[in-house]
Image (cartoon, rainbow, N blue to C red; front, side):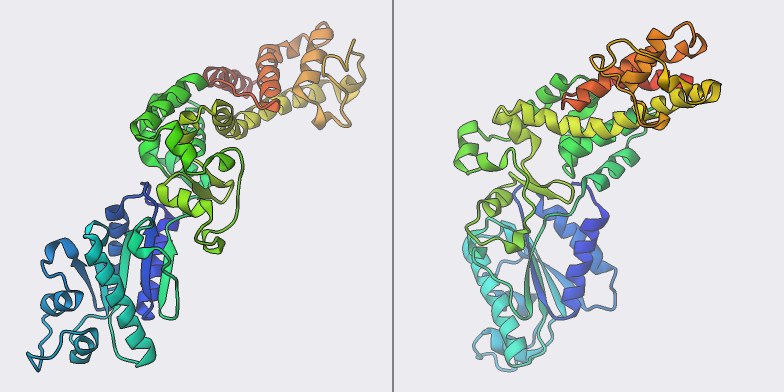
Length: 414
């Protein structure tokens, strides 16, 4: 899992709630490690030394009763040894910290988890209804925990969801910073493809490795192997109701969906995730199990589009500037045979000239444009790549690297 600014922001919001006496239950999908998120929240709590907070690890506590556990761990002195060990009596005795961060909740037995949730809700009620000075709790749990089904936020108690934390732009920046590539353009290509395919899933990004600079089939094969290792079968995935979301994008917030909405179930299973650019999307490894190669290739294509088109545009402007410098705008009126058939239509202005038009111009007016023939081989590659991208087809890294090398050499040409 990538530690991103947005994830730290959520941790900061949780701590801010705790300081306001608002208990928080943070629900995670199955694809996210509880211990990693507990670490993020714990680190944020540690930055507030003036907040009287304590961590309570359930795996270190033998007592099943939450009241007795809190009493023993925090050394509550009972004035009456025979007083019932109830939540109300515990709170009246005092001595508990302001904030209790409950760790290991997700790994506790079912009955124990039920008791702790009941205890936290009862303590919250005491604070709200009877205005007792009570501790505020923070719990990190799995969204599929049956003990938490139907849990609703209310005054003094908030349910949060660990999602919509990573935009593709943020993931791309992260991968670009992590990549230490020296070859021109490779770092940009890698980070864009990894962001589009893996998003915040750094483990998938690591699995992809060198495949992202191979051909699209290599990338697909690598992701397919990752999918096979998950244990999900095609039939199992279809039974979850995932099919309608494979080729569609949804932008509804999780909080606005009712408990029976299929996106809630898919999210809790780790079978769908949210980004600000594309909304809800299924992971690419799901696409390989469902044999949705076309949709997979679209994920690759959208990454390539924003990497390759700027290079094509750079070449286009280099050629236009050279023509403008030597011939003004007269080259725009030079005749071209079968212009429309060749896709080399005339432009409204010189800066609108497309690679197809420029390539045709250099070919049919080679005698006039002898000096400009230096651009011809790069334009051939650019024209081919642009046409394929315009028709939603992927290109290969080797082709992009070839174009980039040609354009880099031409950049210093005068």
